[in-house]
Image 1 (cartoon, rainbow, N blue to C red):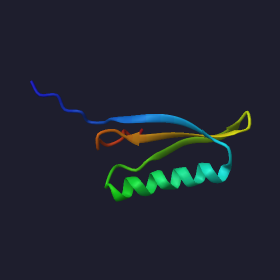
Image 2 (image 1 turned 45 degrees about the vertical axis):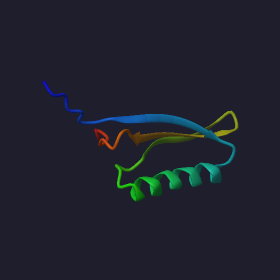
Image 3 (image 1 turned 90 degrees about the vertical axis):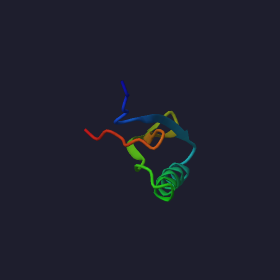
Length: 69
């Protein structure tokens, strides 16, 4: 029996000291995904908490597509 992985991704919450750093990181991740011809990085949420600028990202894992609800 052969298993087929239909969707696979990793989800990260990353904190930054400034909004500009957060935006630069997100843009870098999006451009890297385009260059590698991967599924695009999805920004699920971005917010400020305790002086940190947080972003929650969903990235493709092993070139598998990301499930889009």
